Image (cartoon, rainbow, N blue to C red; front, side, top):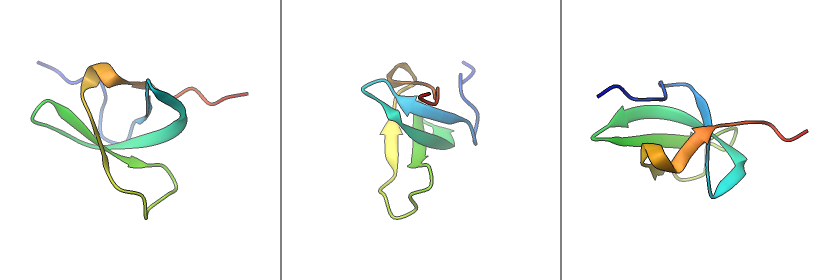
Length: 58
């Protein structure tokens, strides 16, 4: 099974679409993401169905 998002892609959680996340790694069927531009924030972990490509608000 191929993962939908690659390492380095900017995504967001469907429940919080205003917070951009950067995909760090895909392992064991989950995505490990860092909050973009917030290095002190804890790493977030999501299943593929819980995230989508980030669309900046205009």
